[in-house]
Amino acid sequence: HDQNLMGNTANNNIMNGILLTNVTNTELTGNNASYNGFSGIDLVNSDKNNLFSNTANNNTQNGILLTTSSTNVVFDNTARFNHQDGILLNQSSDGNNITENRVCGNWWNGIALDGSERNELVNNTVCDNGQNGILLTNSNNNNLTNNLAYNNTLSGLNLTGSSWNTLFNNTANSNSQNGIVLTNSSNNTLYLNTARYNHQDGILVNLSSNGNNLTENKVCGNLWNGIEVNGS
Image (tube, helix red, strand yellow):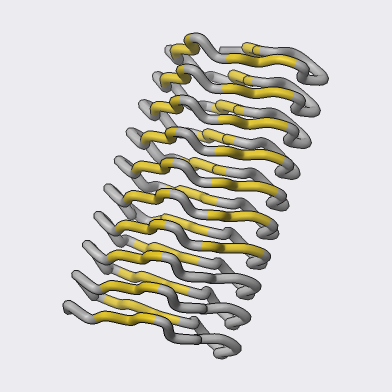
């Protein structure tokens, strides 16, 4: 508890660069955790920690991984060129604040939430990822605000089996599939988002996605439809 990890270089390790297990109230600032065999920075059952201005690039798994870890702040980090996700929250990693991170060029998704709720994703840049910019899977009651998602191989923002989320003022442009896609995801609010120049739909509401509210979004210049509702 109450540790301070600052300015360390944790590269080329067989497992993780930095691993926190059952840790609280620790500051990770300005560390470089790259080229590791597992993930760059890995939190397991660890709450109320601050990750500021770290670099986690070119790791074999994820750049930054939170597993069953809640109420952490992940701010101003760089996660690029990791072989899985740039930043992954899974297994009930709830109530985290993920803000102003640069998450580009990862092989899977830029930022992924799996089974995690009440997280705030704000002002992140997610670009050039091999799958989606931001992917929510079975994750409810999250807020996505002012994120920029462009040039991703699948969609900019992808909600799958995820409900009661709020997407406000995000920009999802020039993605190879859709700007924003909802699949089996209900009761979400999409307000004042911009989805332009995507290679499929600007916003796609797909397959049993019911009760969603789409208000004052700007969907222009997409190669398929601006807004498509399919089987919902």
